[in-house]
Image 1 (cartoon, rainbow, N blue to C red):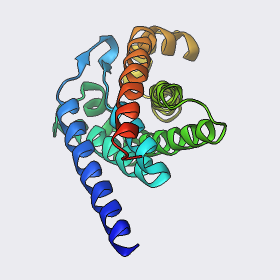
Image 2 (image 1 turned 180 degrees about the vertical axis):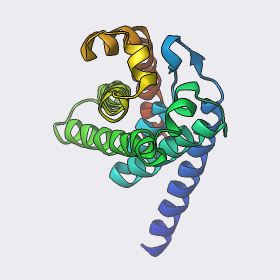
Image 3 (image 1 turned 30 degrees about the vertical axis):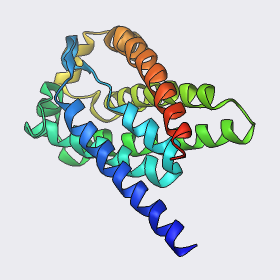
Length: 201
């Protein structure tokens, strides 16, 4: 029993390390879009961690995603023009917007997968839905906190250009969100099935 537990921990630590490495690589492969935003696929490792390791895995890799995103405000592991502009307003609020939102994505993705799994939903469907939800939650929390915490700033007011909050969000992330959700759903579904076949989950 102790050997099995030790092997399980080694597998989980190895998977966490691999997913963190994937996050670092993906952080350098963003596709820039208008308004200082970009298409990113960093929520895929978060969804995979949530599937493979539940709440702890989702929170840890979500936190790693958030930390990388926050560091990009300072030009570390990539660069975020929007982050650089807003971190000078309040590093604390920017940390909340970048880091806390991504931890929440990992936690909720794990809860979604757990709920589907308990209902006996097929593995591929459960993983696909979890990937989709991770991308959806990422966009939702990122944009909501962006507007709530920084909507009053001159930078954001210029971006919004007098548009309402909902109109601004839809215009800013419409294409981004659709692409991210589709790719996250497809990739997470395929990886989840592979992990199941390999008996890693």
